Length: 432
Image (cartoon, rainbow, N blue to C red):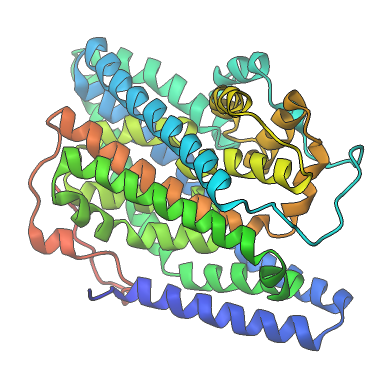
């Protein structure tokens, strides 16, 4: 399979990041290595900031334009209902695979590192995870504040009201405003093209910074846990692709080919936000209607985190095994249901997957401090979680669009062409 230039440069950047990071880690003292990693972090932060500046206007414009063109609230409810049905099913499957994999592979059995004391502080804000605060925070008190903080769920709520209201106004001014929103979407996608040209540099800095501070030895020490987790991710990928195949047929493989670059960027930066604009653009190339993408994709970023789901159940059982605590099947099933509910409030919470695990562990007599065992390698685990979240949301959006009859045939030449690193002045074709 021929890869485009951007994907190739990102792969090269990842390899160079490992080499440079290893050299910095072995040749410099811990203090100097930390300082060097800070400079790498600065480059990564700049790249992520450029991506984040796109998200709020892009989410708002696509949502408003899509909802205004839907015509009525019934369509919005139908699409939202179908999306949530898929999200809940995918979450249950992800959590179940995590539990089954942990029981079969026993990643925490015979662990050879010192276990933390039960009272050791984790410094994770588990208090940020509660139903009352989550429901309250869904509704924005200021759309300007929500956009400034890239609070996707709050932007979604405001955009739903704004888009439905705009769709019910049938004067010329309203139609002009809808057309303006469509134009804003295309402008923001063009901005995305420009930003993505520096993606390899951001990827290089992210990987080099992580290896500089952690070293490749960290990967060896916790190799068994990481290997088991990635095997569980592989099983989840197979299930998600099969589920997508049942709805999309062989076109699911074309979709995966289109979203490989967003997945690779998400994997290397461990940030789902970094690929949101690019993922939206690739779904458009697949033929998914903007009105569906603009509604389902941001909803999925809050409720359809398949990689995070499988991690929470897998990590919770790992902690139990590491401490030698036996959990009955009934307790594991109960924990699965608790994780299912708790995890729906993790969007926007720092180190969200670890926060969920730390919050749920005490409910089942497991020490919260057990998460300290995997804090050191969490970045490398987050890379796999993020790539899985990206793929899961791509498949979910395409499936809902298929159910809605909102996938339009596209020019095969356009669908085959991913955005490469273009020379200045080159024009990038847009899907109609």
